[in-house]
Length: 258
Image (cartoon, rainbow, N blue to C red; front, side):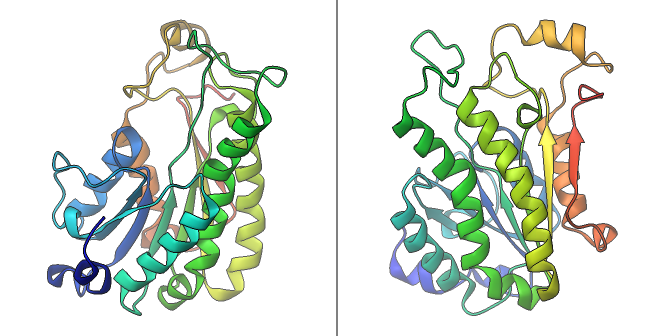
């Protein structure tokens, strides 16, 4: 964990920057998103259950990382207080709820509705669904001060049975898509926009064997998406060009959903 002096004082070089809070920044889409926003001059506060890694290249990253286990509601509450302290009473321009878990069985295959243990189901929903709404509610005053936005990362698995994504993951993402609409309605009067992105098959380290068959048979563009392409859409939703976009779920899957 970071020392108290870091928890209470933002890094000096970010005093006048817009601020993003991002969960799940250590790899894939999250990692690309941090690099995209950092390159644009944003201060990025990252959230994960792991300590900050020295391998992460963004400026000020070691001073702007909050270690939270999103599967534990009490730790989420503690982490929200930490984030608010780091904001120092200031504004929050964007919250991106990217962190998610998709557990598999011992053979690495999807867990269905019949064979997923209920305690595992609860853990998946804590991370994928309850943590996003808890973070948004806990940081609502700071988001409203900035007339900021929330981006929830859902999935193509939230709208169809997927060969690799288990039932707990898929239903949590479907619930997060519905939550996005509800949040857009409820947070809108405070000037906060809420949208979602639904990635399909993205070229990351966690691709499952057999993905190449999906690419050939189901994706009209006949290729995987890249984390940078997803980060570009997240960035758009947090910028001025999307200032009247709220309650939307943008599909990022090369036409796989059609």
